[in-house]
Image (cartoon, rainbow, N blue to C red; front, side, top):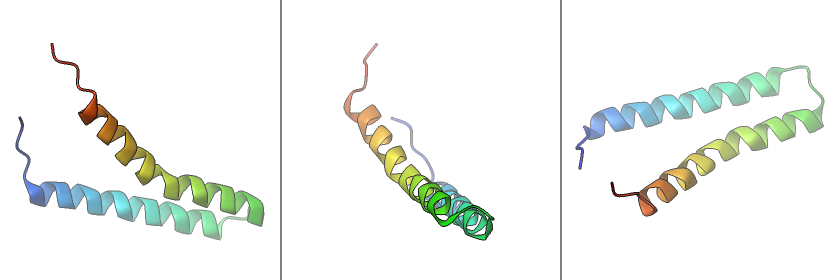
Amino acid sequence: MTLVDSGLVNFFIGCYILIILFLCIVVLRSQNSFRDKVIWLVLLLFLPVLGVFFYIMSITFKIKV
Protein backbone atom coordinates (compact mmCIF):
# COMPACT_ATOMS: atom_id res chain seq x y z
CA MET A 1 0.00 0.00 0.00
CA THR A 2 1.39 3.38 -0.98
CA LEU A 3 1.13 6.24 1.46
CA VAL A 4 0.52 9.70 0.01
CA ASP A 5 0.85 13.03 1.81
CA SER A 6 -2.66 14.29 2.59
CA GLY A 7 -1.57 17.88 2.02
CA LEU A 8 -0.56 17.00 -1.53
CA VAL A 9 -3.87 15.25 -2.13
CA ASN A 10 -5.76 18.31 -0.86
CA PHE A 11 -3.68 20.53 -3.14
CA PHE A 12 -4.53 18.47 -6.23
CA ILE A 13 -8.22 18.31 -5.28
CA GLY A 14 -8.22 22.08 -4.90
CA CYS A 15 -6.54 22.53 -8.29
CA TYR A 16 -9.09 20.19 -9.88
CA ILE A 17 -11.98 22.17 -8.39
CA LEU A 18 -10.47 25.46 -9.58
CA ILE A 19 -10.05 24.09 -13.11
CA ILE A 20 -13.69 22.93 -13.17
CA LEU A 21 -14.85 26.35 -11.90
CA PHE A 22 -12.71 28.14 -14.49
CA LEU A 23 -14.17 26.01 -17.28
CA CYS A 24 -17.70 26.74 -16.01
CA ILE A 25 -16.98 30.48 -16.14
CA VAL A 26 -15.58 30.14 -19.68
CA VAL A 27 -18.73 28.28 -20.77
CA LEU A 28 -21.03 30.88 -19.17
CA ARG A 29 -19.20 33.75 -20.88
CA SER A 30 -19.16 32.08 -24.28
CA GLN A 31 -21.42 33.15 -27.14
CA ASN A 32 -23.18 29.79 -27.38
CA SER A 33 -26.94 29.43 -27.08
CA PHE A 34 -28.48 28.77 -23.69
CA ARG A 35 -29.13 25.11 -24.56
CA ASP A 36 -25.46 24.55 -25.48
CA LYS A 37 -24.32 26.25 -22.27
CA VAL A 38 -26.55 23.99 -20.17
CA ILE A 39 -25.25 20.88 -21.92
CA TRP A 40 -21.61 21.91 -21.35
CA LEU A 41 -22.24 22.84 -17.71
CA VAL A 42 -23.94 19.51 -17.00
CA LEU A 43 -20.99 17.66 -18.59
CA LEU A 44 -18.43 19.71 -16.64
CA LEU A 45 -20.19 19.28 -13.32
CA PHE A 46 -20.68 15.55 -13.96
CA LEU A 47 -16.93 14.94 -14.50
CA PRO A 48 -16.02 14.76 -10.78
CA VAL A 49 -18.88 12.29 -10.15
CA LEU A 50 -17.65 10.13 -13.00
CA GLY A 51 -14.08 10.28 -11.68
CA VAL A 52 -15.15 9.18 -8.20
CA PHE A 53 -17.21 6.34 -9.71
CA PHE A 54 -14.24 5.00 -11.70
CA TYR A 55 -11.94 5.38 -8.68
CA ILE A 56 -14.30 3.33 -6.49
CA MET A 57 -14.67 0.71 -9.23
CA SER A 58 -10.88 0.44 -9.63
CA ILE A 59 -10.48 -0.13 -5.89
CA THR A 60 -13.35 -2.62 -5.73
CA PHE A 61 -12.24 -4.81 -8.64
CA LYS A 62 -8.47 -4.90 -8.16
CA ILE A 63 -6.73 -7.61 -10.14
CA LYS A 64 -4.13 -9.42 -8.05
CA VAL A 65 -1.14 -10.52 -10.06
